Amino acid sequence: MEKPWGTIQAFALNQPCTVKLITINPGQETSLHYHKLRDDVWIILDEGLEVTIGEETFLPAEGEEFMIPAEKRHKIRSLGMRGRVLEIDIGFTSEDDTYRINDIYGRELEEKEELEL
Image (cartoon, rainbow, N blue to C red):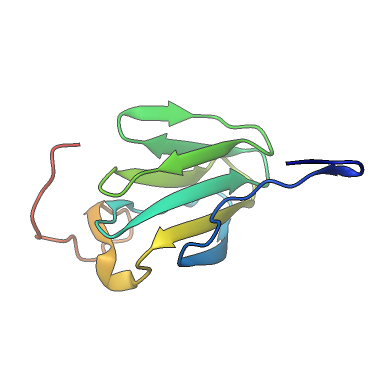
């Protein structure tokens, strides 16, 4: 939405949502995972991150945005420096809705219904 002073960009208008700031420590990464009950919107706040969504991998610039639909595998990896991502979850937000496929920290992988993504 254009305004005389700039723009307004709505990400979750009139929808149940949760807004999070994700910080990835230097050289670390999230698990490869998916959610069944929510979509995620990621807004990259710092360069130096690698984003994987489905079978695609990106090296996004600051300000790039990604829409991750429910049931799509995704992860974020730091390529050396601390990186931040603003995450907007649209739908049911709960850690019970996180299905890990791969995790370098040895956390339990979910043996829930495997999706072909």
